[in-house]
Image 1 (cartoon, helix red, strand yellow):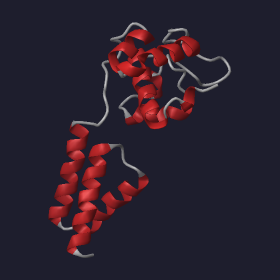
Image 2: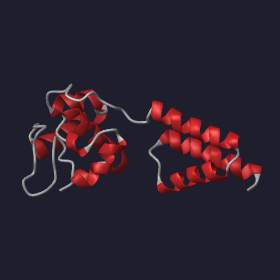
Image 3: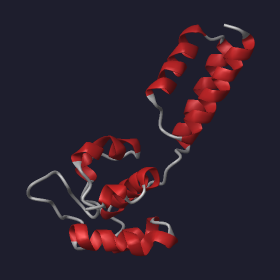
Length: 154
């Protein structure tokens, strides 16, 4: 592999690792550099991963800080769409963090589904944290930033 291609791969890996969670392609690129790269390339990629872990590109919350869903929205959600988020929470959970749909896996403030368990993990939480209003709101915000309002349309 040429020096230019290796440098491009390293730069792309560093940029992508600092912007979001890793995609399968990024993981493959990382593994390739770690298996085939020079010691300098491997050190650069390792430093990028360490920097990402130290300062992840998403907000975290101390669990249990917000007593209800509306408070969590006020703490974490962008001001311009808080009214929309409160409306969704009113419809989905009645502002009750412990809400559980009896006929599905939908749970918590935004009635996040179990299929979003990976999103909880991405943000450093587990599915067991789904009833924490701060956690549920941050996971919903991550989904909202990716997919807009579509996941909550009837």
